[in-house]
Length: 193
Image (tube, rainbow, N blue to C red; front, side, top):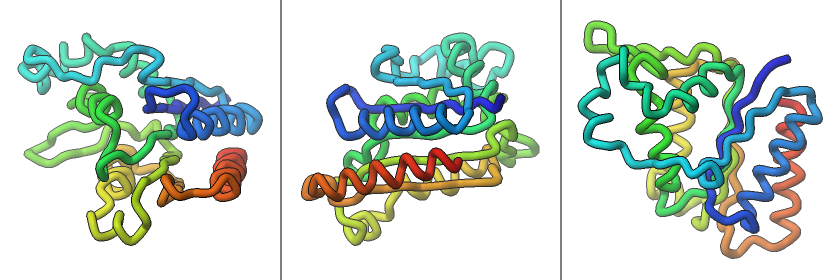
C-alpha cells in the first residue's frame, strides 16, 4: 500500500485549515492510501533551528539526529500533502521551521559540484491545500511565495509525477457556501490523488 505523509500546520483544532486537514486525511484513507498524519502543532514540533543544528547542517553523518523521526517519516512516504494557511504571504512559522530542520543536505538534497540535486525521489505525488486572506490579485502582486516554493523549490527536490496546488483565496470574506465548495473540491481531489 502506498504511503502518504500529510503535514498540517495550524495551531487551532477548530480552524477551517483543520477541517481541510480532516477532509484530506479521510479522503486519502478512503482511497486506499496508508496515511501518516503529521500535525506539527499537535505533535509539538519545534520549528527553531538551533545553533548546533546549523553548525552540523552540512554534516550528513549527524545532521538528522535532532529530527530523525521526521526524516524517517519523510523518507518512508510515496506522496506528500501539505495543509496550511498562508499568513503574511508565507508559510506559518512551524511549517517554515519543518523545512529548515527536516529538508536537510542528504535528506531532501545533495550538493554536487556546487549544484543542488534533489534526494526525495520517493515522493511521486505532491499537493498543497491552503487558504489565503488575500484575493488572488493581491497574492499575485506579492509574488505568491508559497505557491512558487511548492511548485518550484519543493518540486525541485522531489520531481513528482503529479503536483496539485489547491487554494481558497479571500478567506476572510468567504461565505459558508464557498468554504463548503472548497472542502468538496479538496475531498474530490484527494480521493483521486
